[in-house]
Each structure stands twice: as structure tokens, then as C-alpha cells.
Image (cartoon, rainbow, N blue to C red; front, side, top):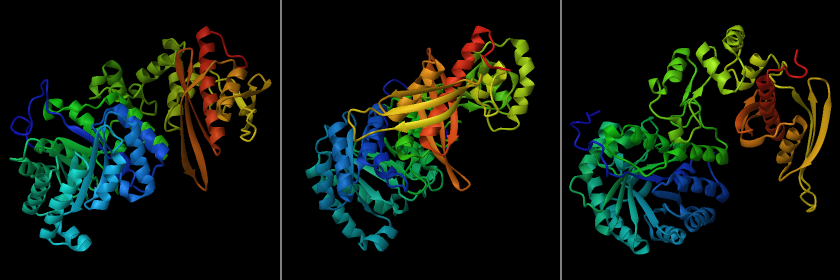
Length: 533
């Protein structure tokens, strides 16, 4: 990669650094990926997350693709303020008219139109000559400009298009009125050096009012690197998607590109208007509506992005997180860096987790329990907060509970046909002292009522903060993995559970968190838990 000091496309960062627009295509290209199709309601959840992120442009869909897609684009255009709302269209008049109608309610609107220009697309898909495509660009982009004041043009498969012909196609679109020219690596074929050189060539002498954009796919795993190289070459708009979703291997990841520009502003000399603290919430929102978990090792927003298990790393991070972290977790909206307790963890990390949980344990108690911690860590992938509470308090069952309560019976009911009857839950729980209690409560929903019943029985006033549910295959069975975060007296506790039924998993995870709160409260009092051995 060219050294920043000798690269003419890179300048030292200063106030008023060049602005790189973020064009989000999660709801268009991202949704085209198998398994990521979204209903209008789900699209609105993602659109609001993009609005909170402060992206420059939302490509809300492909209006001509279906009545449903048209309705989704129109709904987003009507309800989302701030970002420019865009619809994709092929380079033909009916598509363009549909796109323009769909985005018409938006305060700021755009039509994004495209046609293939590479030999493969010309000959195999379009059956058109070079001259025919140039003529289509000239006439139809002009038509699009009459339909919408802001038009973006893409020569599809630009990377595999002959360079001089690509320049002709770009020039034709500019002369017809397009103000944004997108150069897509449609099949993820290019390299950082190659695309940097291409953008230097295309932007040289281009009109100042024209913005050059880059749209990279990840077939060879270089979408982010290629997009950043294009920025160095003169691109001032990156087309990307949350979590990098998109056709085949996906698109350039929005969160990775944004944080690369922010973290290495000393190198790129560029900035975006993204509120980076909203990156993780946006990633999580997409994960929840599409039911696709964020990979643990996903850069920037993955569970492991700010997690450390190795004892050497943990010791360094506890002393100064800059030893092993180049970004703050809080800067991307994640709660904090995570010290993961496992077989590679040392005494510093174990003691820090005990303290963070608010448990009473002096140095002697840590020394006493640490060998048990290491034995436990050798038998499992990760030592949970519940395990730590159990080790310190000396309380807990073989099922991994950190506190005294166990679920014995759960009944949920929603009488939708009976308007005067609210959803309710009936729960029986057993305490380690042998007593059982049964409570029936009403709530906004049956699971909400179940949470209230757990609190009533346990005496712990807990409020659900977050609940993540994901399915995994276990042999022939499909299990639900639940993780609940519960706030009690201003402190948060997390609980996990695996069950066949969604409701059972959610309630079991809630109880696991409540058990931690109960055990921790007793430990702070310096008294043993009732029923503890």
C-alpha cells in the first residue's frame, strides 16, 4: 500500500477534512441475500436504526421489483427524515418512473439507475453493442434527471469493463445530468491497488459537482479494503451495508469502513457524519429482525471484537486497554470491553470479574477459589457470571444455578378473543430449602407476565434490559439459546439458558439472572444463602 506521506490522495487530517458520504444499501442489496428478506415492518426497524446512525443516503429498495418493495420504499420515504432516500432502477423508463414515484414523499430523494458495461454483460445478458449502451445511457439518464433532481448512475460490472470504454460510459452519464457516478465491483474481483489506480484515472479532471462512489462485494474478502483504497483514489461515497450483508459473500461492511476512517484518520484524512455510538445498536437491530446472529469474530461489532481470554492480554487491558485495543467499545455503542473467563485466563481477570459483580471476596478467598476456577475452565468454553457467583458464594446446584431458585412449572396464556382478559402467566418455583411457591400474574404479554411472576416469587425487583434469542441445531433437535440482561437496583445481571421452547428459554434465562442478583445480595451482607450447604 502506498505510504500516506507520498500518496497524493491522502492528506493529513485537519478541521474541515474531506467528507465521505455513507450510502447504505442494507435494505436493497443486503436484503437480496438469501435468508435476509424483510417485511415492511422489519425494514422500518432497520431504517430507523440507519436514521439514528445519520447515514447520508438510504437505498431503501428496488421499487420496480414488486408491489411490496415499492410500498416499502414509499413508506420509508414518507416516515424517515434526515437521510436522502434512494430507489434502485434498471436503465429503462418504467423502472425509473416507479423509483421516482416511490421516493417522491421524501424530503431528499434520489434515483439510482444502472446498466451493465463489461463484455460479459454486453454480450451474454444485454445483447447490446457498445454504441447502443452509450446511447441508452445518454437518453435514459436524461429521462431520469427529469423525473428526479438527484440521479446516480452505475456502470454494472465496471471493474471488468475496458478502462477507456468505462470512461466513455461515465462521461455520457455526467453529460446527461447524473451527479453521482458509482463504480461497482459487482463480482468482488478487484484488488486495492487496482481500484485505487482506476479511481485516480476516472476522477482526474472530472467536474467538481460530480461525486464518485464505490460499491464493492466481498467474494475475495477484500470489500472493505477495496472501498478504502477507492477513497484514497478519489471516491467520496462508500456504498455499504450493516454487518456486510449482501449478494453472495456480501458487501462492504458499513461499521468496518466507518471505523477504519475514524480510527486511522491520521492516514486517510477523511471523515464521515456517522454517529459511531449507534453502530452496535444498528448491527443488533438487523440481527434481530433477520434472525441471523452477529458472528463472534465480526470486526467492530462482534462479541469477540473487544473480548480477551488470554491471561497476558487480560492483564494488559486491565492495566490500560490501549495495550491491546485500538478502539473504545463505547465508541461503537458496545457496553464495554469484555474479559472472557476461560482456561487461558489468569488471576487478575478472575479477581476483576469478582469485583465487577459486587461480590465480597478478599485476596485469601480469591486464592482459595482460583484452583476450582481453573478446573472448571478446563471443562467448558467459557466461565459465566453465574459460575463466578457460585464459586465465590459456595452456593449453586449441579444445573449451574448461582442462586436458590429453580423453575418447576410454567403456564402462559393469551386469550386474544377475550378482550377483557389480559395475557397472564402461572409459575411455580422451588427454593433450595424445599419450599415451593406458585404465582399468577398479568402483563402486556405472557412472557412479560412470567417475568413479573418470577420477581414476585423471588423478591427480586428486576427489570428486563435485553433479551437475545437464537436457534441452534443440536443433533436432530433445534434448541433456543437465550441470554437475558436484568437490571436490579441499578446493577445489571446476565443469565443464559438453552431450551426447546422459546418461552421456556426466555423465562429460564431471566431466572438465571435473578438468581445471580439474589446470591450477590446475600454475599454482600456477609451471610450465607438460605439453604446453602
